[in-house]
Image (cartoon, rainbow, N blue to C red; front, side, top):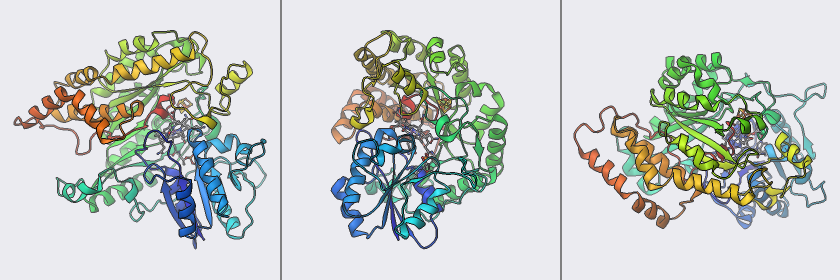
Length: 528
Ligand code: B12
Ligand code: SF4
């Protein structure tokens, strides 16, 4: 049987990184079946397009995965596939939380023939075999022999065959430039950001986050050996292709067990598996100097930190009181001393926020080492404690906000400001933090560093700007370049000076994220 695994785009920004679940399920598919992958971010497709693809390729089963944000598109695509007579199985966090919606048991239309609840590592092979026999069940839940919910241990993690997977659609280097760029240095013919997980789960239970409920509060890790081997495989592929790659450790909280993270990073260094990487780590775990040394030595370049708010009352409200705003500056300094920078994520629209929250936040951000601040709105995702609290209090203004998804729009009323005021705060945050003046300031603050660092921070800021101000066409890019021409000229002029690049850090720009949506994940705050 031929199987299509499809991940929808979010209709606003483009994703910079493929989704791990597709490669994982592909690797877990029983022998005798062929799996094709289509990521809507890399290969945009509409309903007619997916129906044609399914017919042309004689697909027998379509698997669709989606977060809440993309679920409306996922349902439309599922409907189009089902109209061709091919069954659809859906998985991922949204349908896990509201399976009845996908199955049409809530009074709405049915979109999926089957739903895979939770982590599908163990259920996927069963789903495939049932589909091949034409015997798909409605719901597949990961349970043990006694009917109890079970989570995969990750000790027996499948080998994802990165050396042979067709990754053409995920190359961030434009096709036209590939030939030329292959010849530069060790080669730039391809550049990909690859998702790798070293563990699952986070016990912290922040109120707005899906992770603790979905993955459980028991944390599970892969063996160091299996992670190291995966990095070596990825590095080998990049070398053969005369290209580059960076890794996004998608663990919800990469240093949740500091001892284990240190041992993994030491093993990465010992095996020569260092590569440029980014990971999500909560601020409280970055107090450890030795951990930060190892992060830098193993190739860590950017750390995503869900700071959420500079107001301890807000943090307490959302069960994230372990974040201590008083130590944010020290944490960022500790990273910056090792030339590791932070993606700092803030949420507005929290219950103690008042008008001016964005400027108060930025006043602090401006005193920190340069990084990539991102701003989002508190969003009640289904089945989170936040959703339940707001629902109980009758505060949800759009209880099914995912069915008419609007980017950067609240679905409930905050206590001390209006919805419009909260939207204005987010707008202010992005406009100020990514203005040409702010970009110039970020670059200047690294004047004592080699040019490479300044170029990196500039490029990363330009790309992150695209999360809020999409730069999807040539004109939009030209406009941004024109607005920032002074900083660009300055960097170019310096580039021609002898020795300017000495000590330059990176063959790979720190974390180059074209049209990043990076932190909407981030904009929601959560490390995960
Ligand atoms: C990496 C990541 C991203 C990446 C993008 C995804 C990518 N390219 O990998 C970035 C950084 C861009 C991102 C962005 C966002 N993210 Co995000 N992200 C993650 C993160 C940290 C890891 C995802 C992952 O690979 N997990 C590991 C894999 C193995 O797990 P999985 O994807 O769940 O897949 C398993 C099962 O779900 C199931 N499964 C999944 N799909 C399918 C499909 C089929 C057919 C089947 C059978 C099974 C199945 O099987 C898999 C194996 O067990 C998760 C948290 C987490 N730990 O999952 C958040 C998470 C998925 N993100 C989340 C959110 C909210 C966002 C944003 C909407 C944030 C925002 N506020 O704007 C944005 C929007 C993205 C967009 N495209 O519009 C939430 C989603 C909650 C929800 N109810 O939807 C999560 C759970 C984090 C959280 N704090 O709650 N994110
Ligand atoms: S927001 Fe981050 S720290 Fe909090 S539960 Fe989610 S993953 Fe864990």
